[in-house]
Image (cartoon, rainbow, N blue to C red; front, side, top):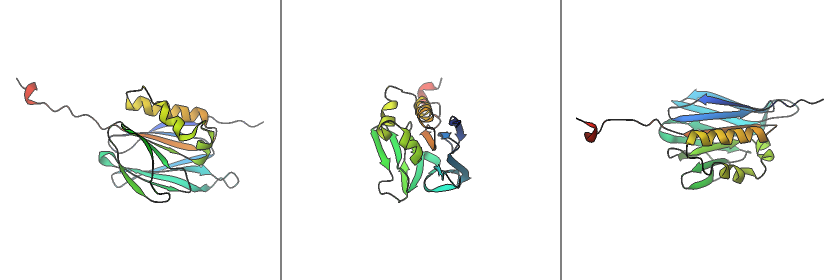
Length: 174
């Protein structure tokens, strides 16, 4: 009898302003490390026979001020869900691309195995957050949906949610 372990959805601390959720099954991997004042991550699938990293992976570096650098090596592109719609990145496969996200923008990285199990692929994910105003709620909804739909692989959902500063203004002064 084969027993499938449900994917684990876990929060991960990233660079200031980033909230990152990981979804990982025993057949996927999410590697992370602090790098250059930010967080570098690699997402992919494990080779079914050797249990080593498969050839394809997506990497991202989350930096300060909403910057993210993405690169996909024989892997699906990253889905960028922004205030003005969504798009895939990088623009050119196998090239590194720097992105500048606005507050509330989300990045979704899916391994090939995860993407195979999403009913309608990345377009399905784009529609899941309609009607949810809070960026963290949108990220959790995406991670939960990916986790429930994906018996294999790994994914990362990240939201750029910088802390709001409450500096006093002249109107606030007595």
